[in-house]
Length: 252
Ligand SMILES: NC(=O)c1ccc[n+]([C@@H]2O[C@H](COP(=O)([O-])OP(=O)(O)OC[C@H]3O[C@@H](n4cnc5c(N)ncnc54)[C@H](OP(=O)(O)O)[C@@H]3O)[C@@H](O)[C@H]2O)c1
Image 1 (cartoon, rainbow, N blue to C red):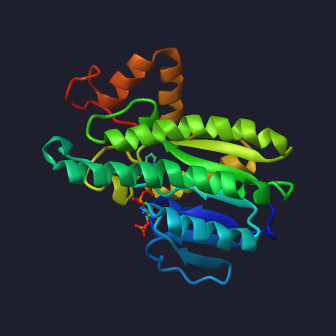
Image 2: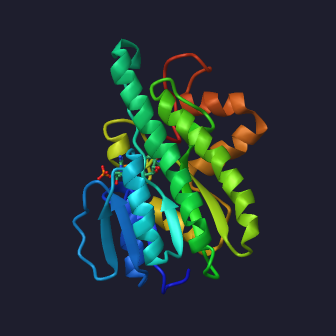
């Protein structure tokens, strides 16, 4: 990585994002963290910018600010997942949560990536890294908007990868994570990896300039999905598509 230019990490207040920040600054890398709440982290290499990524106006202002900082990389990590019985919600409540999940999980990474790509590409080792989930491959009924956004992010990452060909040396990378022990998965799921393990895997993949970074159980799930999408869905959900019940979960 180009150590003179800061790396932008969204969702830097907790979970995987905060671990990414901690590891990067420990390596001497300047980082700009984005979230609504600031993390409890004091480090001369860390700068925090508060931004609600579901607010398009706020993202425009953020982009203007970030362009001035001349970033050398971007990790689109922030995401929100609402689980529950969405069937019984009011139409207004459904519209609000679906809109927010599509905005934070899909629109924000796309806006930041396309707006910052020409700036990031100025350096020899620029990168854009989108953090994705096995639910992009095998959706679950409890979080349809999250799954739709993550599937969209996967397709968008491919498009960004093609777009990046205009700048030789610019890396566009997608990370597929298994279940990680963070606020997002609190109280559910088994066999989770830690946020530290996730962050180390992501940074190792980026250091190797990998376009596809699949960590732990996500590697197995992806291989299975290539073989048979239906089989992958059955393994992830622990049931035939459409059936309830869980036997084994490897991704969130
Ligand atoms: N945990 C898992 O099992 C798992 C599995 C596969 C993929 N992933 C992916 O890994 C990434 C990190 O997830 P995580 O588990 O670390 O989640 P997390 O612990 O819930 O953290 C989510 C981060 O996103 C930020 N965020 C949420 N809404 C935001 C908004 N409107 N504006 C700005 N920032 C916002 C949060 O900050 P504020 O609340 O302070 O704004 C927080 O820093 C996500 O892309 C997720 O989809 C996670």
